[in-house]
Amino acid sequence: GETAAVIGGTGALGGAMASALAAAGAKVAVIGRSAERGGERVEMIRAAGGTAAFQAADAMVRESLVVAREAIAAQLGPV
Image (tube, rainbow, N blue to C red; front, side, top):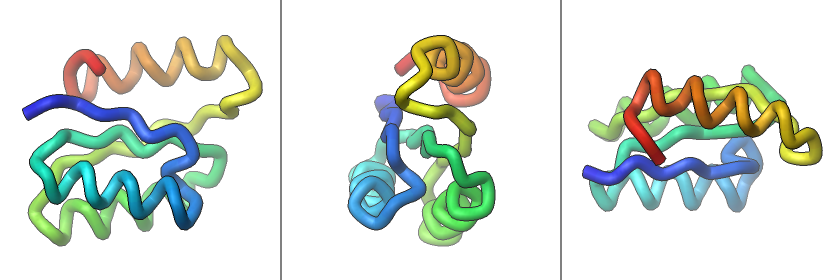
């Protein structure tokens, strides 16, 4: 029942990590720049019975990550 945030969760490696965390029972926040790929990953996780949400953010911009953390906490609970 923990909440995990995967920065880069829209890419191949990050997406695999997000799916593995969800399969292990975590609620997963998929964080990345591509809403399209993020939405696809979230749908894959949900289709497998997991809980996930996408939040757009740029890992190179601190303020973007702060906003993402707050949005994730509101959707999935604290990370």
